[in-house]
Structures are given as C-alpha cells and as structure tokens.
Length: 303
Image 1 (cartoon, rainbow, N blue to C red):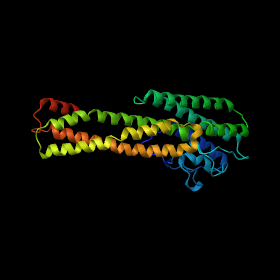
Image 2 (image 1 turned 120 degrees about the horizontal axis):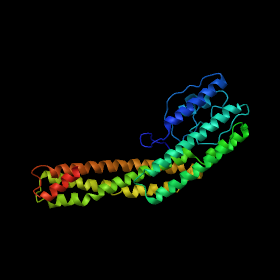
Image 3 (image 1 turned 90 degrees about the horizontal axis):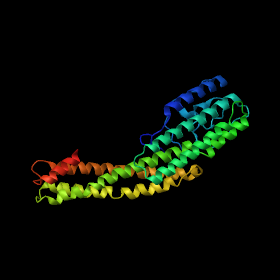
Image 4 (image 1 turned 90 degrees about the vertical axis):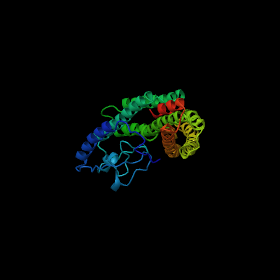
C-alpha cells in the first residue's frame, strides 16, 4: 500500500525523530562512521530499499554493524535478525527504542479514536479493542527485554514486536483510514440532508430563466456525485475493520484499495459541496426568488 502522507496522519513523529536521533548517534559511534540521514516519505508496506536509497527511518541500518537490509525502527515488513557480531548494548538500545516508538504510536491512536466523533459505536469498539490488545502485547515485550538481555532474547522480542503486533504496518494505517472514511461518510450525509431543501427551492420557482436552469443542472450533478459515496465508503469500512495484525499480507491490498476508493469518494464529496454552494448562490441572488421562506432557507445554508 502506498500511503499518502497528506491524507494519512502520522502520530508521534516528533518523539520518534528524537528517539531515532539517539539511536543513530549510538550506532555511528559503534561503527566508527556517521550514518547519513536524509528526508524521505516511504510507504509503510514497501519492501526495505537498497542501502544506497535508505530513508531517514532506516538510516540506523546503514552502519556497518547491521546488514544493509536490516529493518528500521518504523519498518514492520519483516522479522529483524541481528548479526552475530552485533554489540549487545546497541541491540538493546534499538529494541528499547523500537518498542517505545510503537507504544507512543498506540497511545496516540487511542487518543485519535476517542476523539473521532464520526466513528460508529461498532467501529470505535473494534478499533479500541485492537489498539488495547497491541498496547498490552507491546507492554509485555518491554518486560521481556530487560537491561543486559542477550542478543538472542532481544532478537526474539524484536521479531514478536513485528510479527505479532504490526503496529506500524497494519494498525496505524487501519485506524487512520477508518477514521477518514467515517468522517467522509458524515460529510456525505450532511450534503444529502440538504438535497430536499435545494430541490424544493428549485421546483418552487415559477421562473424558467437560465439561472434556474443552471441550478437544476447543478442539482442533478450534486445528486449523481454524492449518491455512490455511502456505498463506497461503507464497503471499505467493512473490509478494513476485518483486518488485524496477522492480516499483514492481505492488509496491503485491502488498505491500498480502501485508500484509492476513499480518495475517489473524497473527490465526489468535494464536487458535491461545490455544487451545493453554486446552487445556493444562484437561487439566493437578488431577483431570482420571491419566496421569502426559500430565501431564508438558502441564506441559512450559506452560513
């Protein structure tokens, strides 16, 4: 799934950047060479790129102590495997920071879900249970990676962190996409709720001038734009809410398809909103309507 940064909100970026900075510093000292860090926006489900094009969140893998394909702090695409020569203190620091990144992300997702006014009760419950289960699991892993643990223990914890919980690759985009789709469903419902008033305003007018004809045509476009949105988004919601961390392979396709459909539906909602404003401005213009009730209604929509 290629995530769109402009639409999918990423929580905890500042805290994660600080964590990464500390890890990169330790890694650079251990290897005797500083890791090069440069900005990038890499989709959560992409394969780990070649070493020459490592993004900022994989820069820790660029130091000599780790292989070039070593998953980074924000990569849930595969189970980590530490090299035999890895410095145990460096591995311990990496695992600790990776767990912290995920705990912070889950805490932010809990806040996002609690504040999402347009989530259905069922969706809120499903997402809440998913986040709670992951948070409990990550907390257990923290206890399983005590200070001074050997590399084998740390590798087992890191592998479980990825394979059992997929906080970055599945849970984060799932929660954000479900919230986005739910918000959009509400916007579509709001637009549909004014359709009767707009239709009444148009059909009440005895005039058949060009302005009213444009309003009629625009209204037909509004209806055609907004009608499919509920079905599109509801279908995507159902598919997304069936996902869980073990759905990683299928989640890439499901979330990618959902995002494409949601983006297309967003275009429809945007076009319908523009149609609504156009109709109201046409019919509320001086000299178009003599019905004061309709005028008041249209002006209330403008506000």
